[in-house]
Length: 85
Image (tube, rainbow, N blue to C red):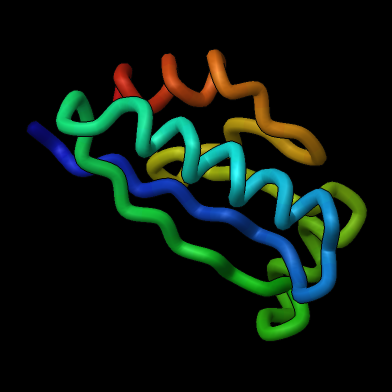
């Protein structure tokens, strides 16, 4: 089983970022042993290049380095993307 890398790009005190992290946590928990997932959080306030690229779209979710979604996370779509890994 390969490991799927999920990256949440956001910033502190971002309500949509918190919601996205909750959705990701729920999806990962539901998948259990079906998938191995590592979740990383990056802040646009700590990386100028991320700020320039994503400031209007946060939260941005990457799956294995590829943009999966921004603003809102669809649980079914995320689940499918993780399983396709």
